[in-house]
Amino acid sequence: MNYIFFFLIGISIIAGAVNNKLGDITSAIVSGCDIAVKIAFSLIGIMAFWLGIMRIAEKSGLITHISKLIYPLIKPLFSDIKKDSPAIGDITMSISANALGLTNAATPIGLKVMKELQEDNKEKDVATDSMCMFLGMNTAGFQLIPATVIAVLAGLGCNNPTKIIIPTLIVTTLAFITAIITAIILKKVWKIGGAE
Amino acid sequence: MFEKISLAILPVLILLILTFGIVKKVPVYEEFVEGAKDGFKVSISVIPYLVALIVAISMFRASGALDWLGSLFGFVLERFSIPTDIIPIMFTRSLSGSATLGLFSELAATNGANSFVTFLAAIMVGSSETTFYVLSVYFGSVGIKKFRYAILTGIIADITGIVLAILAAKLFFPASI
Image (cartoon, rainbow over all chains, first blue to last red; front, side, top):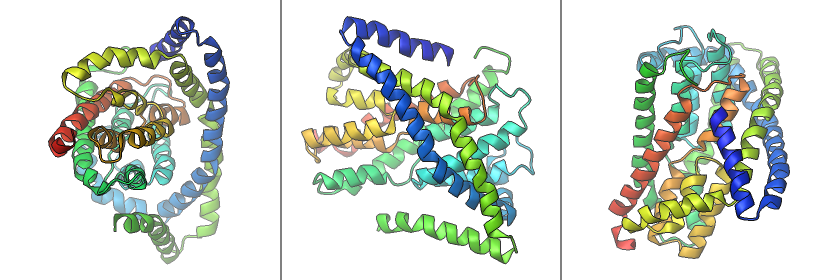
């Protein structure tokens, strides 16, 4: 991450100087900070709402029921999760929310998963294998119906926007599987204590 | 049809969770408030990570460096007769969701909603997730600074997604080229 951060900013300033856009870069810094805080603030309400709902689901035992059903399926992928951890049920809920395109619900549940995984983490600033697997699944963006894209196409007069559903589903499924396989392989070569 | 189902999912899910809670004699109001308290803490704790990432990405986009990358990839894409209009979306889709959607709407409006490049872009956008945003927010919320192989996993999945989107578009929409 250190190198990516340095690379992005370093290249930007060099490219900005060559393209005579250093003024644009300065205003991008200001507006970037602004956007970051706005995103965080806009998260507060929806985060509070879903964490509240999820707490009810947890206290009523609903999450435990889901965990027991799903446990055998995802156990091999998340080898360092304990059997009674609520993380398993929440991982299932998070991936389902993502698959259904419920971004507003997916982020709070996903962050709850991270908190639960962090509780079993020995080195608090280093990602665990389960975290890498979970985020790999998340960043692959598995989604059943790309609702927003269909809406844009329909709005612009596409005669049959739903025909992108099948090809998109194939691509997103394969990318999701690729992420899982990649995480399994990298887990073996990238032991804790190695390079960042 | 799909729209109706997806609109109904959230309200039905909320009703289910609440009903299950009441049946199991959970004090739903108290527990809701207790859980909601964390929302504030978590949202505020991601700010430093978001600032670092979004500023770096905003600078990168403002500098014109994206155009350099674009011209670099232009040669490769032209060889496979893929419209180079797709390039900005290829790079932005891992970085920013709102920017990607903006680029997509613009591309679909300029090229027509029934063109090959629009379908290609639709598949790319529909199958993507903003990798770098997810990584910084999720890791940031628990204070993880060493991401280990999470970045590489995300990037490999993204590249696979881009290549597969091109293949799928060629396979499903050959007539639109």
